[in-house]
Image (cartoon, rainbow, N blue to C red; front, side, top):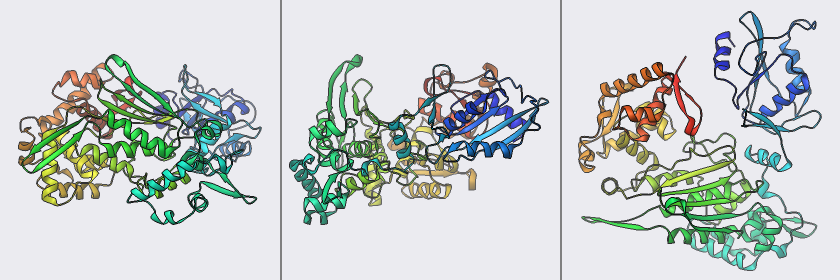
Length: 560
């Protein structure tokens, strides 16, 4: 690490990934801080930097020059399991600072004297907090090294499984085309062992967490799995609560109930154009089913919190909240490209085999396809955090022109457009044009796949290309633009206008120290909120701006 790189980290201040420590800190506190960071997101611990960012360096204490190898060995020897850090002594401003790179743990780490801590935001900045047994379980589950759903439930017996729910399970298998029909030939006991609903112990079948969740009696769920709960809420104007119902029912019954509840709060519009007749719901039912199934299958059952389904009639937004953040390696930025990484593998596999969850593990793609296919904005996972996954699905008046354009294109192609094609078409309409690199970013795939999908849209007559090779951009075809009645809207399609706006935004950040999305919208009222956000993110990707803060406090400064 160079002095310039170190100063760049220090200039960013302390965060969940950066911690400053005075050189006078004792070894015990240092080890605890390193364990704390390893159980969080990992990052940099800078020894010889004060809380205010001033660089004081190491003190001469008579022990001789700092030895990074001895230090790394000390950390490994005083953590369990041994934690291996990278240590970089850096000379800066005539003093020595030690930069310790702490990896995000592949497990749960503790100190040699049995302290388990993790890093989280606090009122006065990041802080370390002791981990409870439930939090240790949650952490291991999120890393995919512990399957809570496969564990037998202490104190539960076969009689805690409900015969009515067994019948419901069989009916679910029978009516779902993607279900494993071979299960219908088996006895309840055989199904239980096949799906992981029970384990055999001393000639008895003991229900697992998955077994109670799928076919358990409600009183058994209340007694043995108190974390399991789900709420269906509807708010009207001025956030007036119109419905607020909580349930502790087994999952198949709960899934059916919530599907019925949505239908009662999901008005449908009918559109006709020539041979086309389209019934368009406020919220696509298949997208809801997939999102709900994901929330129930992948939630953290070690956390005492409910799955929430919330319909905000004023904002015309459906939100599904699942306790527990994304599992290790999954984020909103790779949801469409990463393979399945279930937190509760046994439960997820059981739900696939009975036909509730998408068997290919591509349920998120289906959510995107169903939502984008009726001209809605793509589902939004950006409000997710370390403790919960949120997906927002937006309603509002149906986009008749986009619906008919997609229907016509699909009729011509003799197939449905996939989620990536629909996502690219939506962004091209929203932003005016897309480069190959930007398209790859939006579909979370490589440039070769983005190019293939754009070529497919071009072949269907939906988009046209401009330019050559890597500088090629795509915009709506004249037919598509005419169909959408947006021939005059694409200010951003003109390259010189786009670069002019970007240069103006960077100049604003230089002059005022930072720029926010609200500033961009005031400068260019014709842009939508999403266009302004995309413009700022593009400047970040180009290295012209750096993003700081989160959510409402997010702003952008000129990159150093």
